Structure formats: structure tokens, C-alpha cells
Image 1 (cartoon, one colour):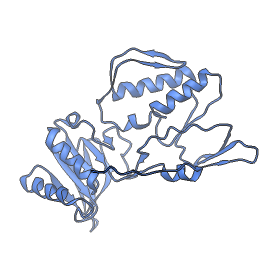
Image 2: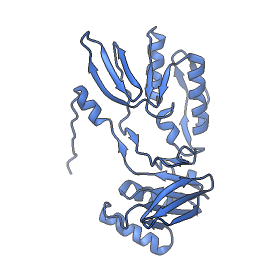
Image 3: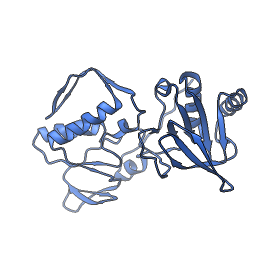
Image 4: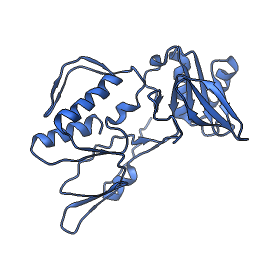
Length: 261
């Protein structure tokens, strides 16, 4: 239910078709994962059924409000919290779409899954807060904030580097459940050590997030001891669930190509 899926649904509605939009997470898709106040759109948009959006610059919050307005004024039917698990042909030639909420029978299926799939979540209290995001696109939106990055892979540490280098953050910390960044490339491990030693980055090793509050985060170490840190924003980078398996199950061939130097 991001921009692509919503636009496609509205176009089909304009053609007089009955359409149901399934969304694994919140209506708005990837937009809802952007940082607060981030400028996410510049330019004009024309939506089928809804009409023209003439506001040239919109923040994340304004775009989320726009999506809700589109849903209400067009009567767009969307079912959120529906993770599609299987798509198969029925005996009568229609499609059976199996999700966590049931089975839907339909004549046609349009996929607007996105290339990245859905980010993996921590499933801890407070993760639904707007201060929680799953990527760092523009570090400057975190200026003057105490930021916690969660994860131990290359994506997580590189997000921390981006915040250290360009975010002008009040502080940057990274929490990882293991005691070293063994999964990272060697240059990244060396950079982490250098930033920690220089006091630019705080590494909270062997910790896991227990709960996210509006102004703080509680962590717990391997011994079960709790700790609390001041916090304004959380960046969760613990992997994702790409739609590759679902696409292959339908019969879509996935080809991976590597560039040559």
C-alpha cells in the first residue's frame, strides 16, 4: 500500500473494477518508515479518482495524512496486517491468495511489493512510535538528537557512520546483541573501533532493546541486567524479508547478475 500499489489500485477503480489492496504493515508502505519531518516529496502528483495534489513540498507526516485522505475520499478498500504467504491457481482458473488473515479468490493479482521487501522488526513495546525508523536516508534530519542504531551488520554500522559524519547528532550509539561485529567487512570493523576510541560513537555490545519510550530506551545485557539511555530516535537495521521466495513460488524466475570490473 505504498505509492505504487495505491496508484495502481486507484487506476483499476477508475476503470470500474472491484479491487482489494493487501498491506503487510501500515497503509502508506515505506513512507511510514521514514524519519519524522523528513521531506519525502517534491513536485505535483495526479491520482486517478482522487485528483491532483498541487503541494510542491511535503514532509513524511503530511504525506501520511494525504494517504489517509485519499483512502477516505475514494473509498479505497485496503486490508492492513495481511502478510501474503502464497499465491496459486484455483481449479476454475482464478487465483487464490493466502495471507495471514485468510484466503482471497480473485480473477487477477497485481504485485507492487517493492524491491526491498519489509524490514524485520524487533517486536518490542514502543516500536510503533514515530521516532522508530528502519533506514537512514538523510542524516541531517536527526540533527541535535540522541540516536540509537540497532543491529550488527554492515547496513547498521554504515547507518551509524552516516549519522556520525553528517547528522550533527547530539550522540550516536549502536546496540548489538553479540559482543563483536564479526559479520561486518573489515574496513567497517576498523572504522567502528576508531569512532568508539575517538568518542564519536558508543558501542553497546551484548545488549538487546527491551522497550522504547518517547525520551529513552531500555536495554538488557546477556546477564539480564537492565540499563536505560537517553534517546530521541531509533534506527532498526536487523535485516528484512525480501519477497523472493513468494515470487519464485508463483513461478517468477529471479536472476541475479553481478557487474564486472
